[in-house]
Length: 301
Image 1: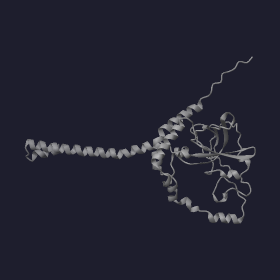
Image 2 (image 1 turned 120 degrees about the horizontal axis):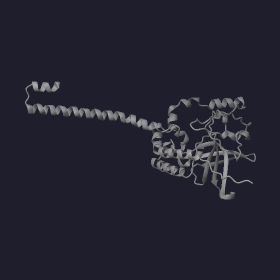
Image 3 (image 1 turned 60 degrees about the vertical axis):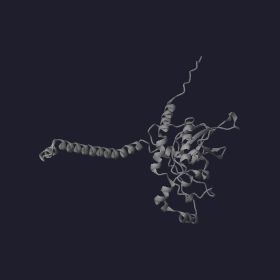
Image 4 (image 1 turned 30 degrees about the vertical axis):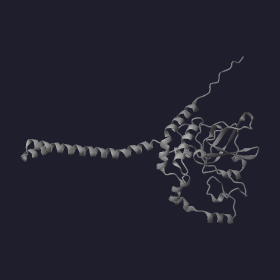
């Protein structure tokens, strides 16, 4: 109103004053539109951040094979996308449960030379590595006082069923030192019943200290900074050699960690692509777990 009174006080004609008011209204509307666009642009990143937060952080631990190789020499975006599609299609036919190094698994697979063409192996997962369709897990068990290890490809069509009998973690990224440990640490019955954890509970960490047999060993365990091994009976010479070879500064090397891992932004982009189907599979798996087979009672007497 103050602007309009000033226009008419300067003696402009009716038509000229109307044009001035019209241009002023246009300018105000355009500035308001620009402000609204800027506000929307400011709010968009917040919405994107909220959408990214929907993806659970535990996905990179449960589904590590969906993350590609961090080495740029083996990266190919098209191949990785096709592999993720094949992995999701395979998971619709077979349930691959959550497991970690230290979990006890039972894997049923097709074996042409076994009776019934089907074989089942139970063992502790001592190593899990690989990415994409090349993801593998190594199981170990003692059979007739002999250590047996079987390497499985998780997405092998010959695998018919994968069960996690005991879900737990260990202190180390691998358990290859069980090869030089007593048999009691690697012995599990083939008729072992599954142990179910309550929902919404964290995965337990087994902090057991494995006692290694006397030398000779298959690897130099004193040089690998393993926390799940008990005290080693070593000579002073081997201890000095291990300290000389040790590289304690590597845990502070941020660039090395960056080169050996996938950035968080790339992880969110990958899991954004497969999150919906994985979430549906998780819900279906939970429902199937709670279902109980109906056993018809038999008449007695």
